[in-house]
Length: 183
Image (cartoon, rainbow, N blue to C red; front, top):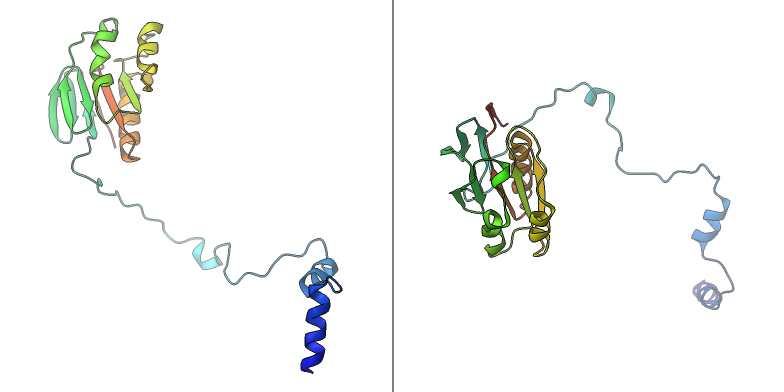
């Protein structure tokens, strides 16, 4: 018996016989599916169970999240900020702009100086999206910072989302004329 097994191993190694799994695969029907030890679909009693959702705690107390905005300013991590603001990792600063027309290369230079560098700058332009000068956007792209220009309510939500993903993000926000809370 042992010699016979040894002879078949030698033939297999020389290419004389096809391995048994190749033969079995050749005999299978085209609609064959592998057997699984686990279910891929829910059982009947699992289809109608109540789904619950829990709000996760913020991962780090040093992360900045925008709680709400109003015509007067923003609430960031429970702190009220009056007027336009710049949110950089671990700091909130007053931003000296009155409207989108005041956004220049000079007003954005702060974001280029940050170390470590930010990946994305989210600009909240107030009530509606306004067009920035192409030179201003080019100025930021030259140092590898992507600029996302949005109305302020959407910019707040985008900033929170990017921050929760752990992205190196900053925001420059002008308060809108109406307020709202973010969830």
